[in-house]
Image (cartoon, rainbow, N blue to C red):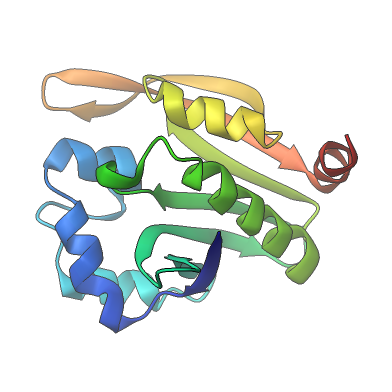
Length: 172
């Protein structure tokens, strides 16, 4: 259904089009970027040495249907953090997020030989939380009032998965 391909400068315009507000940018990327998102920010993001970013391609149509990255890659501790997970609003509700996560976990555990991956998700993103739990992530902690966005404070839910949990989930 989908495949992960390297995120390149040719993909910047598409990603910029998907980010339509400061709040959405914060939900998607945390404080990594500032609104409005632009090519210079994406260039800096793409050149970070401990991060690998992907565009998500629908195999049949060749259409770009999402984005994901894995960063804070620590080869010594064999840990990393999945982030910048996006499926554009027009493509949601079709299971693409689940497929993206399955592909990324296979990459993390098989290709990078990691033993644990983590992610953070704002606690109001119930669809995201359900997706992550569906593929086997476990809730670790809640960072209350983690980010101020407008006049609100957002809570961040930390989640993780080990390679052993992933292998067990695949077999189950």
